[in-house]
Length: 603
View 1 (cartoon, rainbow, N blue to C red):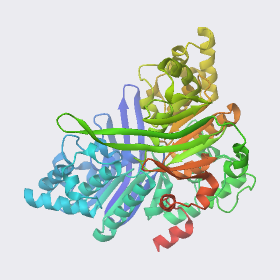
View 2 (view 1 turned 90 degrees about the vertical axis):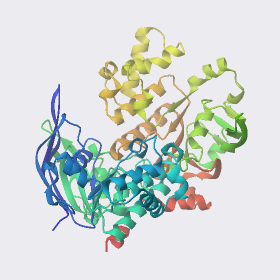
View 3 (view 1 turned 180 degrees about the horizontal axis):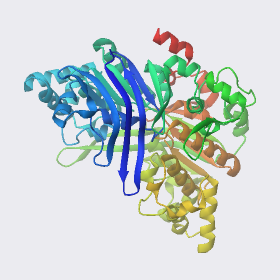
View 4 (view 1 turned 180 degrees about the vertical axis):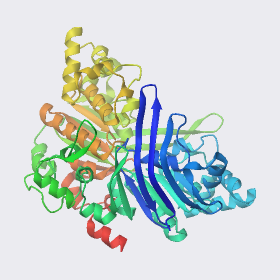
């Protein structure tokens, strides 16, 4: 008998504008010890489905219109989760079903130590006393592979890394040995090495304790590493489900094919990423149908076989065919030359706050970027890559070294001259919503840099420039009158790109600019950036922890660890023949969706 059986779950959200159907007739089962993945883009209804099981939907806006969720509770027996009272749900939460949320920093209480938050759960749900609960928490931290468990027990959430916070959340979720663990994007935006450790930890918990897992994600690479079965959701409906091997080797639905095709791959070359819209059409009633011809029949067939068998050999990675060779760039004048750059942050201690030591965020780094190329900068969180990107634009002041932009040392420029030169280099941030002022319309946000720098001509000419920029990034002109919250994540990132282009910069620093986007939206943004590079001759420093994305975008690659560049070279060469052990470790940690590897795992 399944541990969880969901039948015909339908959920609406009501507002002044009417009602929206977020989940429509969803049905699935989860067996004991099984990992079932729900995949889909933002807005597909996957997180709403999981929140409904624990009674965590925002009420009164959310309303469950129909459905049954039968669950075998240890204390309550067979129950319908959708009909439990709040008191009964409190007995189920933590004891029978636990949840790991996507963002651990917002899920953990910032004013309580990490250890106390787990102890609190143990005291609430078990008969343990305080001392026994504290000892059990240390054991859980050890099982979660946290370094120095006793020290992290006393630490506050802001004092530990993102991966460590996520492991604290996992320890808390597993404190009462639940039968079902709901993991809502638990590895999204984490570095590949941290992500690999989180996935291994979940696998260990499943093996040692027989825990079933409902794994919610938009990352198909992660799904290939951990799932037994997959449900694919689109606009609130399950459009396809099957075993992980069936989905990856023989997808049937055009949406599934699109999701598989638009992921960048290390092993195959693409001049352009397919997008979901290449594989399907949606009519006015919301019905899906396969597109007669997508990007091409070759691409559609390739999606069904993981794009490994049929590849147009003329469409390879820019690094191999479309980028400059080392000899070509060697004969050019660099757009940006960085020499012995250092960014040190003082650590102050004692009553007089004397500097006792330094955090060497950027430690004696040198490299060059040539006009019209994309240089990828990869590394784990905390390696210093974002600090380096900010230092290049003087948003963070360098401690020492030179930043030569077209021969001018930006590090030595006074504020007035620096402001003038900033027209020529811009930054695209990771979170497009945080980067846009919610009080400004899109048109005002794009106009702002033109007004600050006093360029763009008359008001009519500036308005025409805004319309031109919106068209350039694939948005309609009427978008200028709307506010950021009225757009999707991918559209907001396009708006940020339009604003970055407003002053016609020569260099754009992209700081994790697609890491928070769904895979299909990510493909659209990456294609757009490459189109702009070809059409406008823009140069990019592309900062990311996603090595597949870096492989697709980069002509050359810099690998950063602990404030230093440990390896550099043409991207194809670094990926095919990594020399540094750290680079080898990063590449080995990338989730694999190779069918042979999936088959070996599930046997």
